[in-house]
Each structure stands twice: as structure tokens, then as C-alpha cells.
Image (cartoon, rainbow, N blue to C red; front, side, top):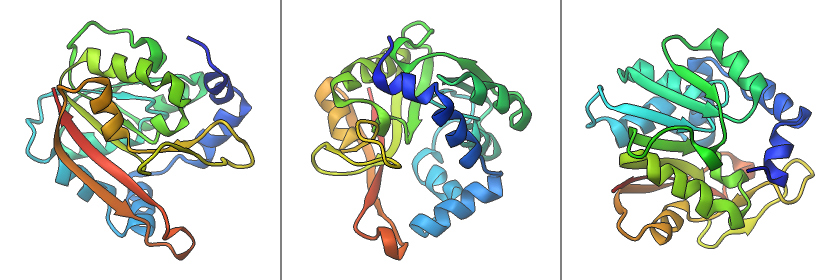
Length: 213
């Protein structure tokens, strides 16, 4: 499934995004501390700390695998990712080890039903046209046997925001609620809003959520 948004991310803009947003593990933690006042490791521990480290995990839109690296350092070993952008997949091979990352679209996840214990996105659904969200959410629900996890820009209602001078490529909303509307059987395990601590961004907040099937 090709959309205006997938074409955008497969273009030179996507490559520039990858180069601009590739961090070491320490750099990723520092980015979160600067923006939210809490490290990425602490967020992961708060939401996934009680889960069995042997579970099978899939990240949809994993870019170069930084989030997967963080989970690996936490002790999770059965880690997989799909990424639309070929450049990011190739780059991931230089910064990840023993993590399976392949080129694929979240609109057609190339795995069988219930293949993973946990399926997640971090900062990906915000770039999907709201009309296309049911498709990618449906695919994530389909391949997950137990959990959906996410961290996305939050707003009570879906609202488009300009992205580096471009319209039609970023939205914020209550993605936890949208998952439940897609599948009312999903139950909220944990949901927390994280306001930005940076002075220029204090009006905004992001949401991390964990849902169970």
C-alpha cells in the first residue's frame, strides 16, 4: 500500500531524517531527559519491566533500531523490526547486533497472525494519515498475540501539525483511544502523559500506553 506519506518517507527527506535522528544509547537517554525529564531506559522499565524477557517483540517503523537497542540493553533478546526506508535498514546493520530488522511496510506486516507477544511504534503513527490509521493499527493488532505498546504525540482530538514546513505529514492525537476504537476488546494496562520540560515546547505532551488483547 503506497500513500503520500510513505512516498515522502522513502524520499531524500526520510534519509535526512535518519541521519539527523540517529543517537547512541547514551544520546537517546539524554534526548529524553532533555525533553521529558526522564530517561528512555526509565520509560521502558516503567512500562515493560514486569514482562518476561523471553517474549518476542516487533517494532513497526524501527528506523535504525535505536529503540530496539534500548530494549536489548534492558534484557529482551527476541527482537525484530520492520522499516519502510531501505537506507535506514542498511544503516541499522552498523548499530545493532542480533536484532532482526527487515524492509517492510506497517500496512502489510509480513508475519502471520499472533506472531509476536508485543508489537509497538514510537513516533510512527503520528506520520500516518488519519484515514489510513485503521489499516496499520489492524495489522499491528493482527500480528500481536498479547500487547500493543506505543509512544506518540498526544492530543485529545486528532490534529494536524506542520512538520518542518510540510503539511499532511504529521498529526497528534489519542492513539491509545484510537486503538481501542479499532478493537474495543483491547484493554489499557498503563497509560501516562509526559509533558515536555523544554520551555519552547511546554504546551505539548506525549503519551505512552500499553494495551493488552
